[in-house]
Image (cartoon, rainbow, N blue to C red; front, side):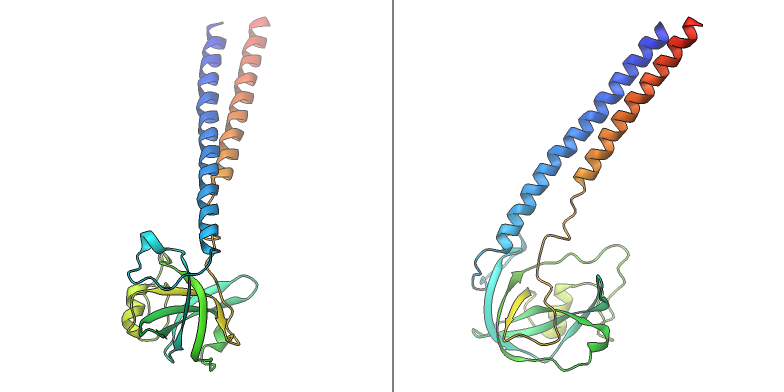
Length: 225
C-alpha cells in the first residue's frame, strides 16, 4: 500500500509540473503571436520619410519611402534561397534627394549573376528600416577585400560604401531592377517554437501518467498474487 501511495504522490507531482510547463508554453505562444502580429502590422503600415535620427528601438521594421540615385558600388552578402540555391543579397549605396547617403538591400541575385550589369541611377524605393542580426557564433568573418560578406554588418558596410550606418531593405523599386528579386522584411526569421514545446510537455505528462498507472497496476497485481 505504501508503494502505491508513494507512486501516486510522485506521479501526481510529476504530472502537475509537466502540465504547468505546457500551460506556460501555451501562454508564451499567445504572447509571441501577439508580438509577431504587431511587427507584421508595422511592416505593412503606410511608409514614412526617412527619420532624421533613426534608432533601432524606435524605427526597426518602420516602412519608409525614399527617392534618390543608386550608386555603382555594390557589396555581396552570401545567402541561400529555397529552391534556388546559393546567391547574394546586393547591398548598394543610395544618395537621397536631400543629400543623405544610406545603404539599400536590393534583394537576391544568383551566384552566376554577381558580375552582371544592374540598373543604377534615379529610383523611388519603398522598403523597411532594418538592423539585421545575421551573425551567429559560427558565421565566418567577412571577406572585405574579396567583397564577399557573410552577414549584413551595417557599420562595416557603411564604412565600405561611405554611407550612414542605416539600411533600407527594399520592398519595391520604381522603376524595377531586372535580375534582382527583392527580399523584403518579414517575420519568418523570428523563432516561434512555443507550440512545439507545449506539445512536448503535454506529451511527457501523458507518458508520465501512463507509466504511473502501469507501475500501480503491476504493484497491485503482485500484491494480489
